[in-house]
Length: 389
Ligand code: DCP
Ligand code: CA
Image (cartoon, rainbow, N blue to C red; front, side, top):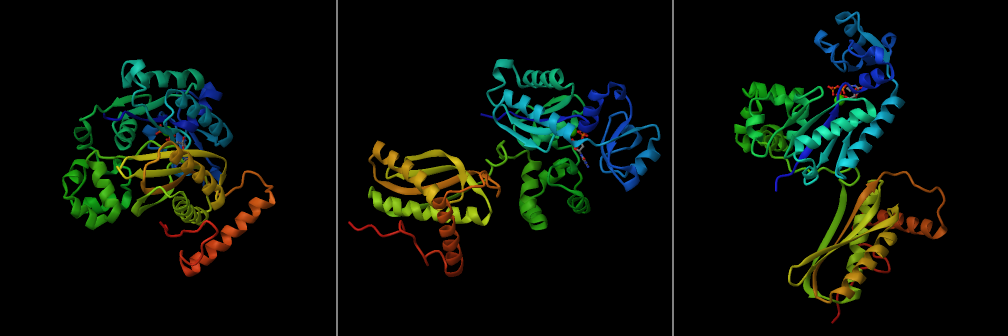
């Protein structure tokens, strides 16, 4: 089934927030920016200021020359952050699959959630109405079967619009548009493509993939598939997007619990070492088991507190394994671990009990040794051992 993805972007965000607080500014050329005395730039321009050629990133001195009557307001970030969190909260009521991008835009995967509203377009209208009702802000909504199509669509229907690209209509929609509309095509790539005689997305889509890859490397492959309307990226909340996983297929299917646990411990050590090297901690631990008949299951648990400690992750994984084995006594051919919902370095609680602290010290020492001498150099108590029958 085709996905239904929205890209929702607030119109002239900073300016609109200021206009809500001071309605006298509505309908006028307004600029929100930095300090004109300190070579500030335009952050947001009202749609009335845009016909004068004013756009984000332009030096304020230039903007003033272009439109002397424009009203300049210094940016008040706390106001925008407040409006942003209310905006995201509203979106979250329409679908749980939300991926915020910056302050004023988000992807929403509404596949199936549009049904009670009659159609994607009617759902988009309902979302826009709710945003206006609660925040007095207008939004533009692009609707497509992928992120790339939804994002380009919202850009094209600004301000206060809805543009739906029906499934199957992607290529016809994209073909005539300038390549610069594609995410991933910056000034440099646009220029290089121009030198190759490529100006529209359709031109890019018709080039052989090999040629684009040779010229632009990995980015080439991505923009080439976007140009063809192909974009499998999921709508994912930041933090959920990344996970670290490892798996191991056994030479012989097994139900030997010690053997399984030892290997699981080793896999935990590997993913946690990677986690620590990224200065992150994980909140979600999942194991994967593939049985002799190739049936594969995943079981996951959420940690009370995000952790990067091998022993904490292993204990949870071990419990999941134990439950799975008790439920289903079938020989296992593959075991895997995945840690996800990764969070940054900051610790949630400043105080640690000495047991936790000890585990952290131990992990660090093991990481150092494994980095120096390789991963087989040291195994802790639960280390891998070969199955003895
Ligand atoms: N912003 C900024 N500096 C930039 C671009 C943007 O400070 N160079 C800030 C101000 C914008 C907000 O981010 O209000 C959102 O950026 P958008 O690109 O979505 O611009 P607007 O919301 O202002 O206008 P549009 O209606 O085109 O989305
Ligand atoms: Ca915007």
